[in-house]
Image (cartoon, rainbow, N blue to C red; front, side):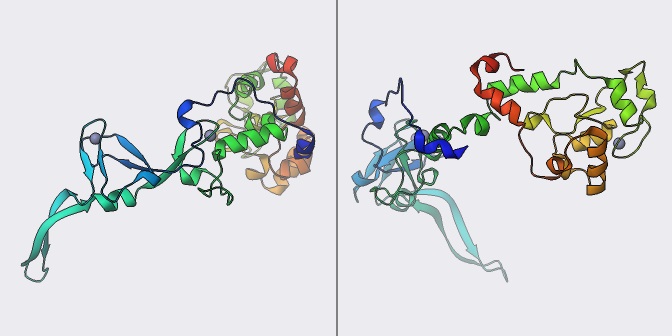
Length: 289
Ligand SMILES: [Zn+2]
Ligand SMILES: [Zn+2]
Ligand SMILES: [Zn+2]
């Protein structure tokens, strides 16, 4: 899917860069929490404006962070463990100069406008900050759109996916009797007899039907895709891809019983390609399958 990148361009609509971010993509800030222990405020100071004789009052509590001054965190006593005699005592204090100089570096993302730690921007040697203008999240999101892979990569979180889950979880068209028959009324994993759970083609106990290929990867629960598992085994198997739960002999047997390609179950987790396709169709997106 990444192939498409060379022939695509992304046109932006309704993008409003907030005033406080304009021109700030390459400016760094020092960010530190107010040293007053009862205050939770964070102070951000433009790095290039930091003066050796700085004086930064906290906008919330008024506590002044001043060069050359210290804040006492606790008082200490240094003792000799042999006889508990006192060697020296004094305040454990932090010099404000050290505190400010050792604070983390931040900068604005020119896309989402968030002030973020430096580490959340990729390297970019041509820039003064040595970092990209846009944060990693914005960059990944942009690239995914540009490459046409956004739907495939992001649908984990998308609301459509939740709707698809609901859709796939519904067991309306499933022939339960047929599934029990195919697995001879036994849990495929541990072999326990589940005949008692089935009366006149209706499962009395819920949770005995497993998505062989998990709904997480957008495979619907159908008569073909279902594996009969007891509640315990089903709980263990949960959303695992078959190869991560069954041994190879079991995978081969499951392939025979369900008709699902052994290589598919034995390989890496794979999204249901037809579900992915349908996510791209705006009509189907509103009313999947
Ligand atoms: Zn404060
Ligand atoms: Zn961003
Ligand atoms: Zn079992």
